[in-house]
Image (cartoon, rainbow, N blue to C red; front, side, top):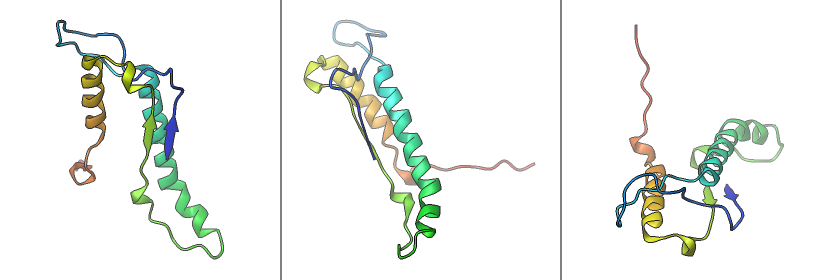
Length: 108
């Protein structure tokens, strides 16, 4: 699944902290909104697609655990070096390997 924003959308916001080459730029609302939308679309596919496939004659079952997505936002060439570094930190933080994700249930 791909969420595409307009070329004018901003990947990073204004400088949050730092100066002189050590600036930190938070993700812009344009980017975080697109990421949230993509996450919702993936969850919807994982929850609802197997039921739709099961109701469609002639279709084989579908493994929705492998549903992935991407977000295309902004123009990399318009970012300063510090904005690029901040963006890459944010992007890399989104790419959590599935094996490191877990849920724990509490027991009373």
